[in-house]
Image (cartoon, rainbow, N blue to C red; front, side, top):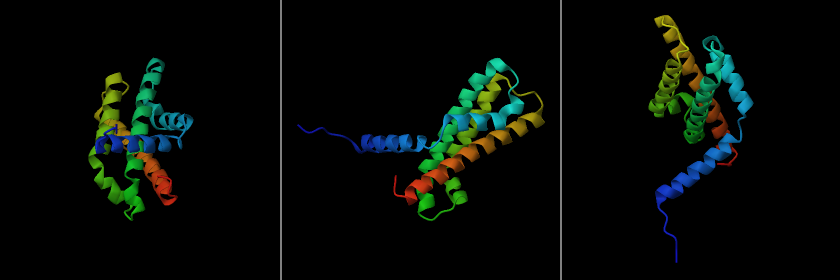
Length: 146
């Protein structure tokens, strides 16, 4: 008997395989140092640091994989800014998720200027990891390792 598979299953398997390959190219130490570099002014309570750091790592990995998945458009000739407009909603969702995660843990003050500054920090953090994934994915496409 033959096993019947659907295109959705095959697409998902292919996506998982690609994501595993991409995740081999970043290290956890680099992720942690970038989290500490970006969010050290907002990490005050030592008990909350580990939980907040885990949330930041999750968002960084998702942004990295998002950039990597859209890197095929860069390989075909679009620049990063053009490709970024394609995934604007997904990126905005990641930024909002990270911002809300920090608000939940209560690490941000009550001042509106602080909130706006922190939102810009979240935006820069997600943008950094999106670009990292985009450039590494584009390099993999050029080397035909996808």
